Each structure stands twice: as structure tokens, then as C-alpha cells.
Image 1: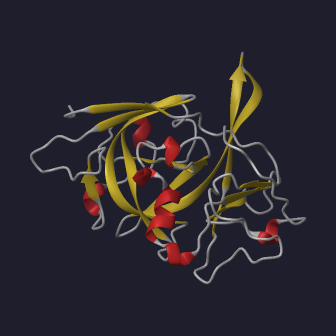
Image 2: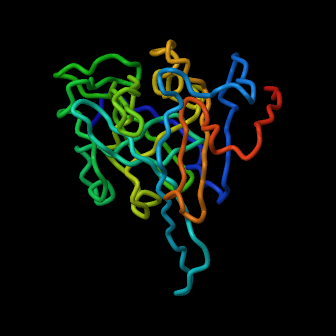
Image 3: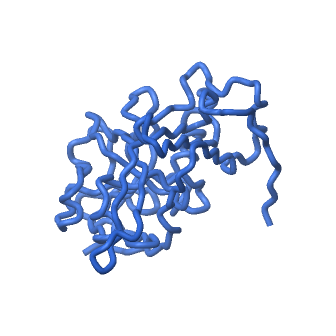
Length: 262
């Protein structure tokens, strides 16, 4: 049993519509977006492009298929040596959640599991970021999604996008020690990669984008991500760009609109 338990509620796992191009620029806070004719790729190789895999699961009622649930997932690696996992990119949460090797329920065992003891870059932490001492029990959190929940513990770890070791960010992650059957048992993706800013995170250190800009400002990676979703799967399932957007996927120049927070 944990020494303490923290409860929080996250938004729904994002359901991604079947569209060809979606750009989410609302993550940009204080910096000015690039002009449409300005290159969105810097000398450090940002944005990082991750191929997406489309997976559709039939929804059956009275023995008939009435609809499909669809996910788009991509590969990341965690720790050293790298542990490869496949994650769904969620616009409604800000945590990276991976099945832990200490999770023994049926749902966890269906997926690739992250093993903290096999990573030289990992540190077990409590929710406040303090290191878990050998003689202490760690904090746990319950995260609720629209169709399920996880119970997790915490680690500070290196997360690399698309298995690219030049694009690694130290960020706090959630190691799931319990996972509900839905939606995790229905799909092949292993975990969840939250794309939101720290307002939806337990603390700023859990937000990938917060840590990206804080840990490597010289990369000029932007607080942006872009989806290209291919319903015909000619490009697999599409791609996600992290830290910017892929200009090659644009049919026309982007049009930027100011937004207000009330």
C-alpha cells in the first residue's frame, strides 16, 4: 500500500476524427507563431516527426457492427537502454502514462511494460518530485479518463520521440500499476502521451512540452504539434509533428487567428 494517494481527474482520451490535416497551435503562449513562409524546421531537427499507426476496433450491438473506435498511435522510447513503447497522443491530458512491469493485471500484461529497474536514467519519485527512499513507500495517483482509469506511480525519466536519441527530454512520467480493461484492453497501443500544457498536469514537470522548452531552449522547438491523418492509409496512418509542424503536409499557407482566455 502506498504511503499516500493523490487523486486527479483528466479529460477524455481524445477521439481523433478522420481528417487529413489538423494543426493544434493553441499551445503557443507568449511567442509569436512563425510567418507562413518561414521555415518551421530548426537546425536541431525540430519538429520531430513520428509515423502514426491507425487502428480501428468494431463496436458491436446485438451481434452487428454499428460503429468503429479509432486510435492513431506512434513509437517513443524511454530510458537507457531504450525501452520501446507505442503511445496514443492525447490532447486532453498532460501526462505520459506507461504500463509498469510491476503491474500484473491482464490488461497490463497485454502490452509492453516499462521496467524502471532496467533504466540507468530513471529515478523513482513521489508526486512532489522528491526521490523515493529505499525504506519508504511511494505516492500513487488515480487518473480518470472518459472510458477508464489507471492507478500509477512516478518516475523521472528520459523520453525520446520516435526512438530518436537526439530528441530526448527529461520529464516525470506515470507508471501504471493498475489499468482498466477499457479502453486499454481493446487497443494495441501501450500507453498515453499527453500533449496538454501543465494546467492539466499534476505539476509542470509532468508536461512534455513544458520540459521540452525548459530543458533545451537552444533547440528552438515550439509549443506546437501538428497531426496529419491519412484515412486511406497511403502513408500508414499519418504522422504527428512535435515541437512545430510539417510544412510539407500543408496544402495552403497557415492562417493564424488570435485567441483569448477568459
